Image (cartoon, rainbow, N blue to C red; front, top):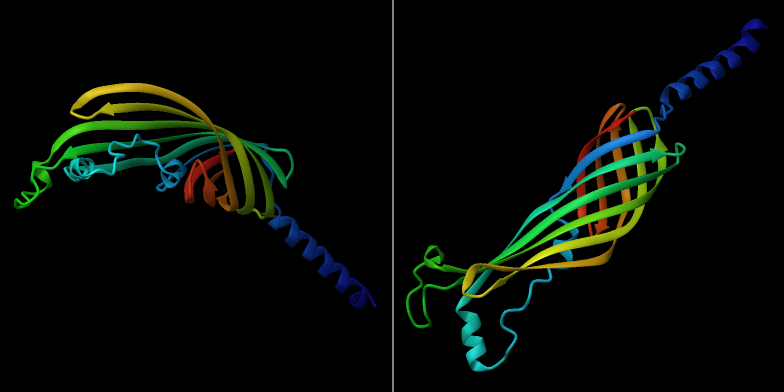
Length: 219
């Protein structure tokens, strides 16, 4: 009788201890830093001024005499997270992204052999520096001791500090400042680790498009 009635109780107790060992030990605060190679502003397109907007024969010939290169440093951010419960959290972060262009006049003219891009002459440069503060609401739908999964949505503003170049004067630039609304939707995110953890997110928005990875600390 002891064996018959005691076995279910022992199994239940063992199961309870097993579930307890898998529960996430909640920490209220988190600090993290991450980066993405495909930043959001680059995905939406840098708003560099159009150099050759005409459609006349002289405009087409002038446009064919230049080439433009675009660059990006990626998107980098630091974030602070406050966990209200195991399910809900608020994240405040600041992201930085820089993109720039270089316009070269081609060394070869129409009808002459191409001497290679190394002979092209730099005629103009321009850049965009984006600083994006944002607040995001996070929902954690999986909580284990070392693994958490979540979804998040954030809104904020994107501050753009631009430098407009002048064709023919590569060192001459004009500063500009603009502010626009920003958003970031991350349907899936995962963290692995306890006190120190790594994370990966998939999302779309002004901060990044595609994926972002990084490292964080809970306390």
